[in-house]
Length: 152
Image 1: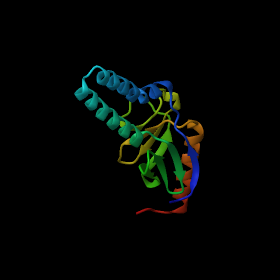
Image 2 (image 1 turned 30 degrees about the horizontal axis):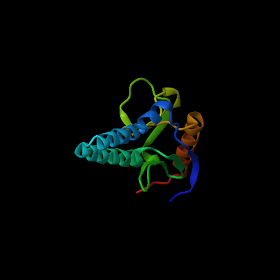
Image 3 (image 1 turned 120 degrees about the vertical axis):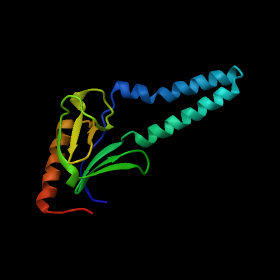
Image 4 (image 1 turned 135 degrees about the horizontal axis):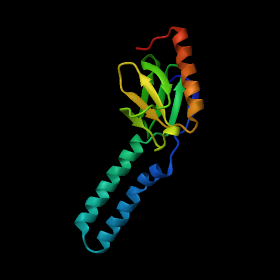
């Protein structure tokens, strides 16, 4: 794996944290149903809760790593989403409504960064320091282009 040029953590706002707490409420409801003798629905709700927890664990960003040849969005466990520099046009603040792949953990546009890619869907992230992140990503992509390196 290439050396990290810059790293940032996601900005988790209060609304995102509230969504992450949903499994706790599911567990409380399952416990209530179990106490009231509705074992079947309690088990079903518990299974659903475990599935929701596994999905959240797998898809919630933990870190954004600007590497020498790609941007890597580190997710849960062994999962990551890599964006090779050859596909990146620029990084900017989102403008208007935009469809794309969202790894956003904040509901506010002021925290968002839109990674515009050539011929592919844009990627939206919410680093803790968006201005610094964009500056470092643009520098890394420019440095990669100037080096003439190609991947694959």
